[in-house]
Image (cartoon, rainbow, N blue to C red; front, top):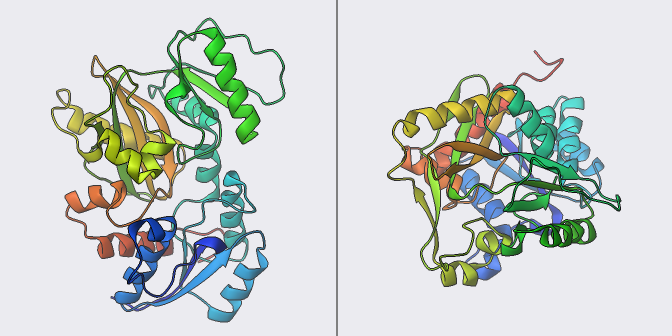
Length: 342
């Protein structure tokens, strides 16, 4: 394996220490992904540089000019506090002809807009739930007739289950209006409302640019959640350790899937990946209804990459160890064809 100069791009508040010895899981949690990637690449023998980024592209330009990295490992999920601006950071990397890991700007832009991504996938005959966008700033929000309760309300552009709770599933027009107003007021984004698919929530990791590899189908389970509660990945389910323990959250390889799903779902995820122009790596989130039909919920380019989390765990189940996973992501970044670079 060739030893590389690698600059890891991360939020300036999440730059990890050299070691986490003596730190609790709660203390490490905010920067666990950043530390896991940094420490693993360092242990693999690469020359690794941590670069904190917030609202100044100049620090990236300076690091690229000074270090001359073979590749930038992109762990940024926002820029200047705005989630969708991560696509512009990647555009900047392309403008300065710097190779990077993860998704390209067009794929990031398409996937971040949950309505646009669903419209594209629907054009390609990929099943998506019926949906409608309630724009920020519009006073009247009549419910389209095509939308039947229960409905699922979330931000059009925010990721990581921001703004999602058990109250996100609504059962009447009053609850719908209240939840749309909540998204507008607290997140300052448009709200997307879609048919709630009662059933199983599964994830499929995808690696690749042209040739794609899918990971085993992974499923979200709740061992102790009350029976009448929606089985959805709320913010607490994703990020609150105590709540995870309380409701018995686990993710694992899906079992007892509908007949043929082990073949049809990975194929479906590859179609979604290509339809949205994704590159590098992504996680495709699906719901399987009670009749066994899968629906795209959203595509997540550059998903959570911490050791022990869903993407890395599903890769492990496929025989890809964590260091090999990171190396594959680097290889894909180096192999992605930048415009104007031979």
